[in-house]
Image (cartoon, rainbow, N blue to C red; front, side):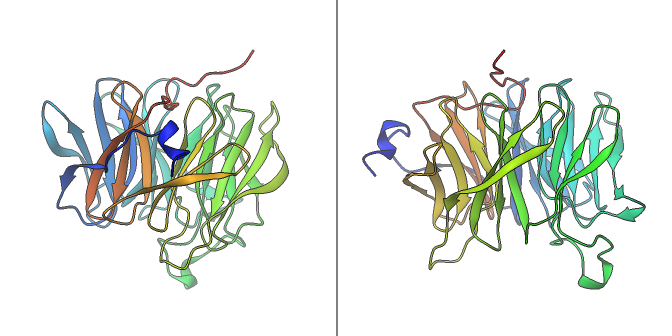
Length: 286
């Protein structure tokens, strides 16, 4: 725990908002507000210190993971509609991808977008019944800038959260069923190589690795059993940020030192000493 205090400020996570069904997918908007999903309620909410909580999108298709593309548009993984969607500035929603090789996706779960526009998303079967699955695996997919869809990995049991390293040269993906986080090197064309397990999150308490984010020093913040697990880039566990409810995802906000945590019925926040890397402001090495 002493190691954790070097990067996370003392104190318990602050309760920001509550009364939801199951919160997920937080992302900070440049306008100074957080949006997050309430999956069973099929809503995306917006929270800000000035305005509190309000519905940002109704009938969200049971949206889960959210991110921003390089143009600042919201990209969502929709369980109910079995697609990845994009919301334009005028509020219109369009499909980015809903099939691969002529078969419907399972239920896209989480999504990240590289600064050049290349997208990766996970596709476990959590939002469908077994008889509805058309894909032969629970895959990880890449969507190139020209719209081409590639299955980037097919050997996961339950692929879930994913995040880039600060320089975008490594992609971290967790496998909830296997309770670990894997890392892949990313080639310029988006090909994933050198798969290795970097974080073991097996624990006797309920909860598996889910959403994750990184700070500017490359520490991983992964939601799991008992709270948010914080790791060194090499997978050394620094400690766990305990949360009153089991967390599902997290995102950086405010000045970059606030980690917002979606945990079951609520939204929490804790301050960190090292700023995070939000999707719209990555540090890309040249």
